[in-house]
Length: 212
Ligand code: CO
Image 1: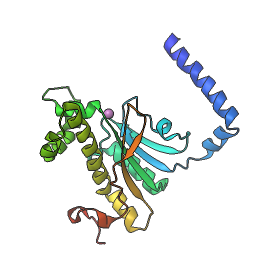
Image 2: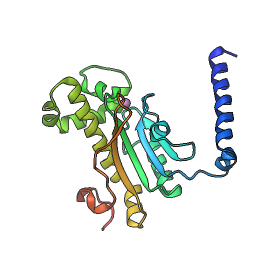
Image 3: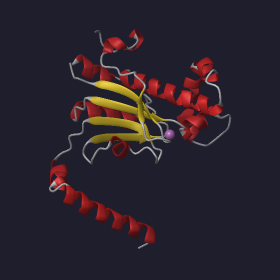
């Protein structure tokens, strides 16, 4: 066995023993069911681990991560996660989390080819194009990047709200809130971007899929 995988398994063993010791019976209870409070949709960036930064244990957060925390309407992966979290797990809060200094958002700002990922990041170029004046006014290159990181969070919150999954849940009276937050890698702090949406009336009419 390679040393790398050996070390990984050793660390896992130590963690599992420690976790069971501080939370007796935790694995028995987790094996029976999961009952997470949150659906977290965040960036794949290794510095933004959902459970750790929210101070949550296994079983407490249902997680989907991809490059630049995008919610695209043709992405079966994120839509399946959303459907399961809302319809089966019945979470009450969906957290869309971006982060400052996001490499994916930065790549989308560049006039450069990066590979397959450019197809994925195209959605961010569209946001950049849509909000061009406000991004230009941000000032330095890093301020522009941070402004686009925030705009991207807000756009993805809207995308979540525009899905039939979320709108149907609202129409059926499910207590469901969609939040947009952004994480500071330099200080570990989550900031609420105050775009929390809790009903169909709060989204633009053209996107309504049901008569309210
Ligand atoms: Co990122």
